[in-house]
Image (cartoon, rainbow, N blue to C red; front, side, top):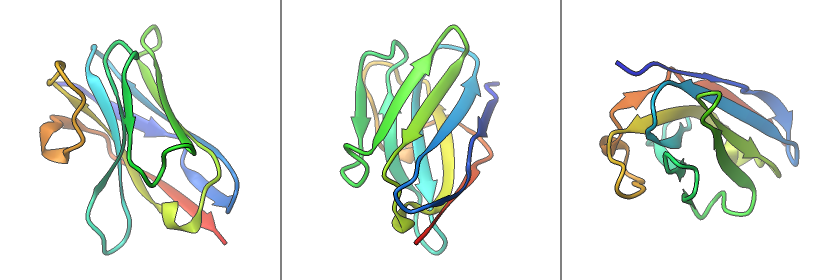
Length: 121
């Protein structure tokens, strides 16, 4: 059983930055998702187990960066230029699918508990 633990959420003003962290044992392709109140969970970013490949949702491309440090079993989501519409609970997830990066939440096998990100205007 893979345990994922997120940290780094909080309250920030529009235009500010936050970095989320997710610790997870094992070499999995990892993803970040978010869910705002009253909305469906949506894909944010994903990274391959090696860290070589990444993919982003159009809404965050150019503002968010996903990375990982396998020596620390940690995946990061650096969020710059935050907007009020980025407000959501952010979840990290791990998938046993390693041959390609997937954006669909049902492809992920393990999930963290979520961390709240609130961006004030």
